[in-house]
Each structure stands twice: as structure tokens, then as C-alpha cells.
Length: 154
Image (cartoon, rainbow, N blue to C red; front, side, top):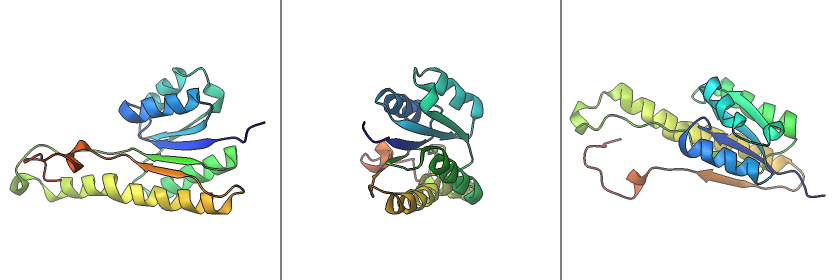
């Protein structure tokens, strides 16, 4: 029998995170679906024929305690972690840099960068401690990292 494969997907309630979650479930993974909107996560799970391998985890991953809880619950339920798909992210209004409120910039950096780091730390701790050590961390980024967008200062 093949070893259980386990993934966590942040931003799993819509868009790329939803598609990734459904693809992983279809491929046989046990998946922790993480996002802020419980209803959206439940709708994503309902679209899968493998609902028994899905764990819905409504969480605000900007909150340290929520991040700890997500990884603890996945480890407790599934016993390991093989893939972290860091996908949660937000944008800011397309405005000149001098017009972007600092609070919005901080929110974007916190969600797009700090939460990715926190989730990676937790994933690495689990991956190093488990039998059959290791795993994969995928950090999903924006096209803006590769293409100039003059009014997207964030």
C-alpha cells in the first residue's frame, strides 16, 4: 500500500487555491484546505468526490495562533505533511506609489510575505520530524514578479 500523501493549501476557497486543492484531492492526497471564509472552503470540498480526505480549516493566517492550529490539526489528523502550497495573497489598488496608504502596503506585505514565511516554518518543522523526512513547499507568486506593472507599487 502506498504511503499517505498530505498537503496543505492556503487560499483554498477560490481561484488557484481551490483548483490546486481539487487537483490534489483527485490525485489521492489528503488535503488541509485553509482560508478565511468557511463557506467557500466547504463549497470547494463539496466539489470533490474525495470529501473524506479533505480537512476544512477556516483560519486567518496572519494570526500566529491560527497558523499553529492549522498545522497542528493537519498533523494530528493525517500524521504528516508532504506538500505546502502557499497560495494565500492579496493585492492593493492600482495607484501611484505616493497614493497607496501605508496601512494597505503593510497588509499586502503581511499576507503575501510574512504568512508565507510562517507557514513554511511550521511545514519544515513537521517535514523534518516525520518518518520519511522531507516534502515540498510551493510558494505561489504573482505575475507582477516577472512583468512590469507601473502602478502596482506593492
